[in-house]
Every structure is written in structure tokens, then in C-alpha cells.
Length: 281
Image: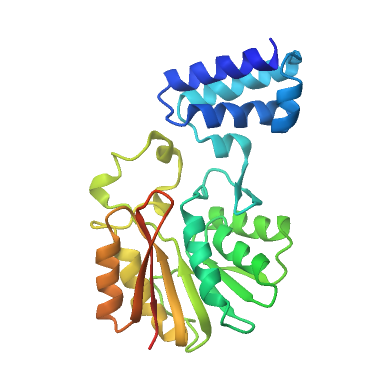
């Protein structure tokens, strides 16, 4: 089987399995099993796969056809141009979350040696990216669950984020929240309402429910963070959230009710209100 034949076969099997972005995924899978980049694949598309590569492709596709997340199969995924380890027990970084990172970076341009707190850190994609983009920053990432926290720590080491550290922490408990400490508190918390948990994509069945379920209305974590961590923001500091589809108005209301000023909504690349932030005044 040539690389070209493998690519076409992979596309057909992924499409038949109901995977929406089957063309993109087929490219990623061929790159993964061959170790080639896009340019090399275009040049060497008539080359034959080795028997090992064919067996690897077969095993990989069997996993993907049952909708096991591609990121878990690979064991890693890119976010904001950097690689992050992922696997069972941690939420896969999404491209939508880059909108949140970019919004935070724009705000932090005005801060000297910024202090940053990333809550519900998971893989650490947000906090580590901010630490790498702003060398003068100090970043603390809190994560409740040991399985996810192990990925946070591994990703700090992988990316050489010496100005970032991870610790175990539960956002529903305010103990240890230092007053007036942070220029930025950022979070991509669980935000799926309970009634919608069974209607989201099949892949999420393999991701931890604790990283997805946001309570009956999906807003439990936003309420807790605003209640327990507003005191930790400096005056003029920003609290920034990723939110689910159709949640931005509710989160705007929570921030406004809590006395935040300059409450802002940013759309993701699909035009969906994805980021809500407010300034502690």
C-alpha cells in the first residue's frame, strides 16, 4: 500500500465512521504513522508503507472508528504552536481556547511582571502558553484531579516553562486564595449543562466527565470562581473565562452582578461568543 492509497483509504473509513473533519484527520494520521511532514508526503506519496506502518495504521483506525479521541491515540496535541501531552483523565486542548489565550495576552501587554492564576488547569495549555509567551510572568496553575495534574506537570517540563508551576486545588474551596495577588485569573472550566451531556460528540464519552459537566445549568464553576477568587485579583486585574455556546450572556450577567467593569465578549473563529472577561474595579 502506497502513502497515497493509505491516505485515501483512511479518509473513506473516517468518513464512514461519521467523523466530520475526516480530511484533516486523515492527513494527521498519515503524518503520524510515517513521521513525514506535509511537503515530504507530497513528494513521496508513491512510496510504500512498511509492514509496521500498515499494522500501526490498522490498529489506529480501529480505535478511531469507535470514536476514541485522535489526540488520545497520538498521546499529544498541538496548542498555540506547542506540543502538549494528553490522555485519559485530561481534557483535550481545543483550538477555540486559543481565543481566550489571545485575549489574555492582549490585556497583559499593560502589566509588568504579571502574576497569573489558571484555574481548572487540566493539561496546562492555557497557563503554560501564557508563561512561554511572557517570560517575565509568574504563573500558578491549579487542578483538582491527580490524573489531570500529572499532565499539567509533565507539560510544564516538556515546554520548559520554568516560570510556571502546578498545584492541587479545588475552586469550590476558597482557602489559600491570596488577596490582591493576581493581575489575571483565567479559566476554561467545565461548562456543559447536565441535560446536554448525552448530546455532545461521541469522543467526549472518553474524556473525563469532571472536565465537562458544569452542573444543572453549566454555570456552577463560574459562580464559584467569581465568589471565591475575586478577592485574589488586584484592582484593575482581569478575570477571563472560556464559555460554552449560548452561555456568554449568562456569564456577562454573573460578572456584572459581582461588580466587574468593562465586561467584554470575544468571538471565536466561528463567530461564537467564546470568551467573557471583566475588570476588577
